[in-house]
Length: 325
Ligand SMILES: Nc1ncnc2c1ncn2[C@@H]1O[C@H](COP(=O)(O)OP(=O)(O)O)[C@@H](O)[C@H]1O
Ligand SMILES: [Mg+2]
Image (cartoon, rainbow, N blue to C red; front, side, top):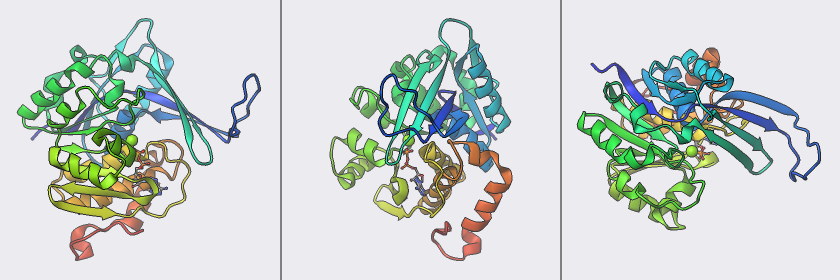
């Protein structure tokens, strides 16, 4: 039996969230926020943290700086039950990254200092460690500048070691969506974009057409639709799942939490509808507290939410969704 359910390679940093800033960020003015949260951030770390909170065994590799922000990030991830023994701490001029998020009424500003994330390279990775799992996940494809030329090789090597592989690209800061991504997708078993990303990658404004195209390349495609829930395809099989109705604090990390929920079921060989419904549940749950991981740190809150919204298939006595809106 492998040591981990899922291994992850990715960025590890904090999110600084400032709530309630004015719509216009006027230069030279002192602009006041009415709330602050400094919390474990970055797509990969949020994913790993929340997957462990759901009960999967997770191993994580990253590169951080020898600085206080790196130390807090690492401590938070470890406290969430993720194995961080292979995270590399590197002294030098580059600090651990930081993302500043400004949620506004109808959009958010996301400002990122990538830091060590841009420098993590293939040589930082312990391949035997990564291979001691059933599944491997990578997110923030476009942020791994140094690793990027060898991501395809990494996927191929882990697949030949018997793992399945999932990818969530997240946004492309250059908005180009090109290069080797299409070739990489051919080595992916589960692809997890949001609607915008799916359309950008497929080069069409029509979501249906984008999903159709992606489903011809990747065996399982799950597309996140924000407050509208999500849809999934496995070959010709398709299903949709509405979002759960919750009191939203902020949607930071909802997509990464969705990935955690979806893959938690996928590595347990659950059917597509179960993976999708559990992804929706984890995505919605993450919105109930600030940032991407705060909700998952509250054990009781998670257990209560699961009791309220989730019935396993056997108990539900039907073949379909157990997440109750
Ligand atoms: N307002 C919301 N209410 C309930 N669930 C939500 C809400 N926003 C997001 N979610 C859940 O989180 C998932 C991911 O959110 P989304 O914003 O689409 O992803 P991303 O963060 O990648 O853009 C959705 O598919 C949905 O399941
Ligand atoms: Mg996302």
